[in-house]
Length: 596
Image (cartoon, rainbow, N blue to C red; front, side, top):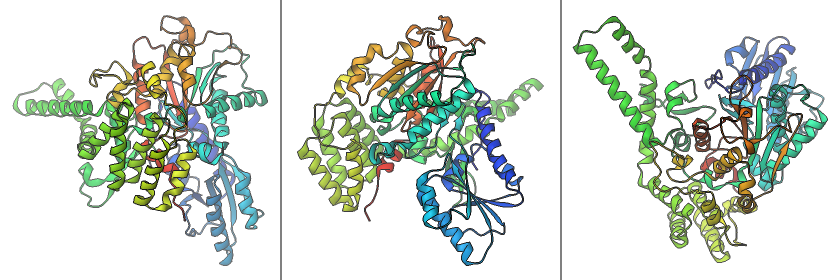
């Protein structure tokens, strides 16, 4: 199980959200009396590990199992399936129940859909003639707090479903999750949205408010002042670039899953050959909280300083006589030794990747593509990678970045690279290329690219970025300021009106609306500085902005938002919500599909 994050310092009461989810799950288990076998789909199990401890489940007479294609072995007469609403998972359940029936086992079956039941799933049970055998219900888990300022809706495939499959059900889920937050923290008075999906979410949210209103008549100031919704489609450049913050790089190379990484025990200095160990990564670890958002170059220096200072203290301890209070201080410092050791081991492991010529070459090429000055150099580089059969995700990542910044490739080049890819990696990847084309990520050029205009207007490329003492968000990519965060920066400082012309150049519509009893209160447009009274909630805290990424967000973007939050003159606290935390590789992988 992953470590449950500490939410004590969250800008809003996220503990109550988590406790509500715990309570709902425990009530489900209490209502099914006696000993029972709880069968969880593994992906959902990862999310639940951030909400409830296994020991707590076992206290309620639960035997835990993971759902898979194999049949479940248990002596319990009651089986509770807790699954996401996906038809393929229904097939596993049907297989298990049929297997039990063939063995003459009499059992009571419950299927709880997370977060809600769907017609497609119930149809599978009907086709298998099991709809009368099982009791169907829902476990409404819409929000998983990942850390004190990050919430996940756990909708891994939302971006691909919307862009390729035309399935927009995830947008209803996002609106429902935000509406749930409003029931706890009040109706959000200001809404800004950019992108097709985001505007749709804002629209669904208003419909939900009309049908099931959050009471906004009490003159209590809502805890969340503004909601900013942003489509991933608006900025696909950022997630395809390699992140250069500490947490971003950990995700790029070790794949952070639900707030922890799983790596060989030997890397962490443990004497367990061939064994894996889970390393929790959240703000409960004080050192990680201090360094997670910094550029990796700086992190290495900080860890070196901490280790050196510890060594000096130790030498002083052993060579000179110390007073009791000095001893006490030294012992206090020793308590942080496990954290320092943990991150020195992780950083050392990361350097084996970041020092590779292939990674440095990739970084160089990403910067060249984003600069958008040397088309031929980029084209030749990608062509060479394909011919060398470099890992497909890495090639597609650069290819999509190249295609987006050029608004597609000329027909001759598009056809040529497509043919080369299929020759090099096999024709079974045709489905992947079709998905990418459908999503507009790798396509033929139909109009001139406006990337240069956007890049200049929003100052996305910053020369001489000081990564050690940054004064701009561009430090997270060593010189490229994430477009998504620049837009949010404008939305917070002065509203979107001053950048309206640029917004029109980016995909999808945009909107700004006011809602509820506080719709007359000044929005951000008049709130550029701390001095302005409205920027503070009555009890003296800073006003709160909820930033929602529809389609995924990277750790580097989260770091950039935290950096904005820490700046002097910033009148707001930010809380980030997303369908999923992604990186270039995991985002490309959602579009990958093999024929046959």
